[in-house]
Amino acid sequence: MKDGTFVVTEADAESAVLRDVSDGQIHTLGSNPDLSVGDAIEATLAAEPPMEVVWAVEDIARRFTVSVEESAEPPTQQAIDLAADQPVGEVTTRERAGTGEVHVLTVPEENTESAVADVRDDEATVERAARIGVERVEIRSEPGVVSVRYLP
Image 1: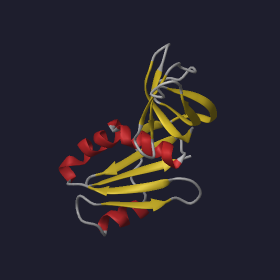
Image 2: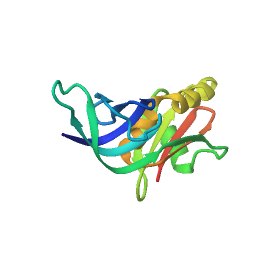
Image 3: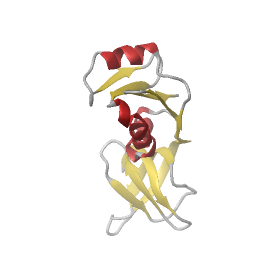
Image 4: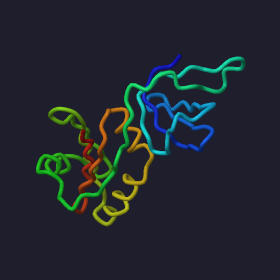
């Protein structure tokens, strides 16, 4: 048995592939309990005998989808202040009041748009949100600063 949070990376009518967001381990399901690519689940998996290379979902405690969106809003003053105190190429992580985190990246001004696209398209962004247990990622930017807000 394995308890954890997983993101569905592949799915069809017969099976699904899950990635554990804590350790990166891949689990192929022998049947698909109505999961779709992009779903995140907090679940218990069990290896199916006799070879125990295929898994089954024993229980799903929570099922959710993580949305990743770019916001037209600029980074908060706190994010701008954090970016001002760190060199280009650095990342600072802060917990949010309540649930979630804020990651502030300092990038070369001319690379801001590509940094936003990288964060938006990176599977690790969704996996991090699932690990934190939040359903929404909001990306804010201004030249040289990218703020990634992991929100409930």
